[in-house]
Amino acid sequence: MAASGGHWTKASTFVRSSFSDELDASERRRRAQEQEMAAAAKAHGARYRVDISEYGATTYRRYVITTKDGRRRSFTNPDEAQQFIKDLGALQPKGERWQPGIPIKWV
Image (cartoon, rainbow, N blue to C red; front, side, top):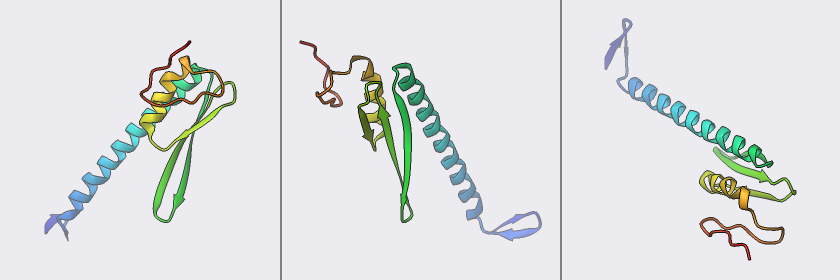
């Protein structure tokens, strides 16, 4: 036990507060990444939004990108969503599907 302000508290209080600081930092990094993706999508004329749903105690995030011609893609993985936004400039004509990691070829 450690003395804190004249009262005895559990030693785990410090561990818990540093863990919450780490969670806050990861939340800030995730939000900054989402803002970067939104700006990049807007630069390509697309719309970007994050749908948040909760089931029980678990929170799920879905990244939804709508291109300027009306096509909509949604991702649960933020890295795939970011890759899709990077590839928006060379997106295939309507009817073809985008797949991560496969270079786009024009015939």
